[in-house]
Image (cartoon, rainbow, N blue to C red):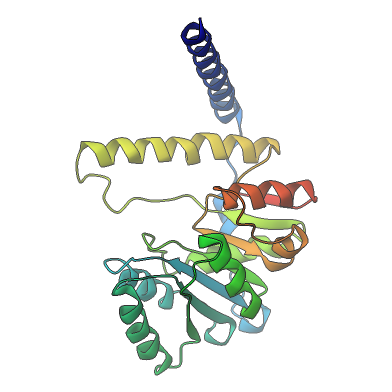
Length: 254
């Protein structure tokens, strides 16, 4: 009897999820595409009008990707005096030494980049982000995981959206470096694309709650602090902060 009950509950859960997804697909098909230029373009060349941004890079044992990540972030096209980079390193392997060399190399070139290495890993990723925020100088906080490679114009295309004073976070769509590597990567890319292209677009177009996906997003620091900051007592600190922020009246964009 217990097995039958669990089986029915699983079927019910899958049915509800399927109906919810179908509803989001319907919303997506009926939504009106936003003019991209109105959303992302900002042609004002006056650097003093751009807010200060801190880019946080939480890494843990990422020796194979940390250089690619840091190199890409350093290449971001943004006023140099308004960009700070934090490498939040909790690593226990060679990643720390690699990160140290990268930070020293770019600091010698005048880049405002810092390595914050922890040995206790308190709070894991949420703890690293929270600790980095204590010394961050940015009004806006960008977060990139180690397997991401942001385009050089990423900040130029996202920061202007924060002229809306109620925008607390802007999540951007993920791309794929290895989409065509094999069938598994193609399947994973399809699933992730479905989430962003359909689900996130549908939620954004109807004012439904959105979630920050943990990386490739830009936060307003005041929003993070107003919502209570990063909390480590959950496995999904990104979803947790997203919902607390929206319950406080902030908007999350996509």
